[in-house]
Image (cartoon, rainbow, N blue to C red; front, side, top):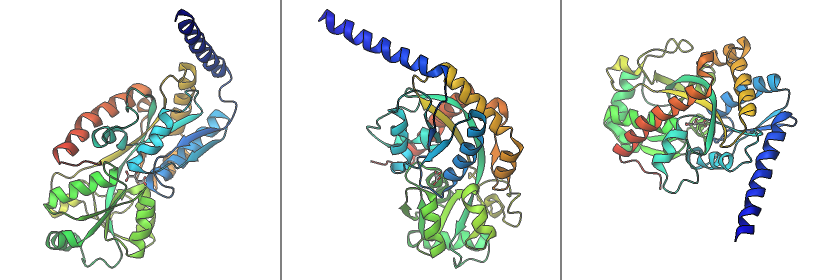
Amino acid sequence: MAFRFVRQGLALLLAVTALQVGAQDFPNRAITMVMPYAAGGPGDTITRVFAGAMQKHLGQQIVVDNTAGASGSIGTAKVARARPDGYTLLMIHVSHATNVAMYKGLPYHPVDDFEPIGRATSGPMVIVTRNDFPARNLNEFVAYVKANGPKISLAHAGVGSASHLCGLMMMNALNVKLNEIPYKGTGPALNDLMGGQVDILCDQTSGTVPSVKAGKIKAYASAGKTRLPQLPEVPAISDAGVEGFDINISFGLYAPKGTPKPVLDQLTSALQKSVTDPEVRQRLEAMGISAVPVDQARPEALRAHLKNEIDTLGGLLIKAGVKAN
Ligand code: MLT
């Protein structure tokens, strides 16, 4: 019995030592940044901006891995069980907070199984439709949705995702139930919206502004109280008297629990250099997204942001009777 404990203790000591030795020359190979939604979506777009910026500062390639499904929880679980050596990271938003309330038996805890590195972005959402949606303006859109609820399809990226939360807020604000169509990300959802297979999507601007400007989809309102500088002709949903509807989506970067502090410090430093990089800020602003202030691109700020989202949004979904399984 005693020998088994000694052997386990030695194994643990060796594992910790290996991590500390590895930390000394981190990074010495490519890093994987998991984006737990499908390629081509708003999260993927933001992830690739930061992967491209951070790899310059770290001196090693950052490969984006789109492990999608179950509202981002499949990709997130992959990072939770990865070796905590800094070579597997997670870029995620609000679903890191909502999944713990949505999925029974989630194979990770959003706080206990991760090390926060820092916040990266924040950004608004916009209500878009297929190009032939039968409404000439926001007021006609509201009237049509109220009159046709269940006959209208609402695409989103899974229960608790940003697009789902925005869809919930819209259904709640208009007191209507739409026919929800879940996808592995709003990249594929946008393709179906452009093809006319679905009717409405409420998505982050990093996924929609280019398609609106290209005339491939229609934008009826920003999902908040203010218009979007990138789409000045599009009213705010509050302009139609629709209240209680204001959503902003923030992405943050995490590593698995147990990642050595010197490695986390290097990753936070590379993230901070990226959020202050003029080229990064300009690319994001063109899509209506803001890089966070540098004092938000650090562990304590992300930890506090996640706690707030768990306390507020998780409760909102449970109160709304939303369950994923
Ligand atoms: C969502 O929460 O809707 C996702 O961010 C969509 C995506 O990035 O594909």
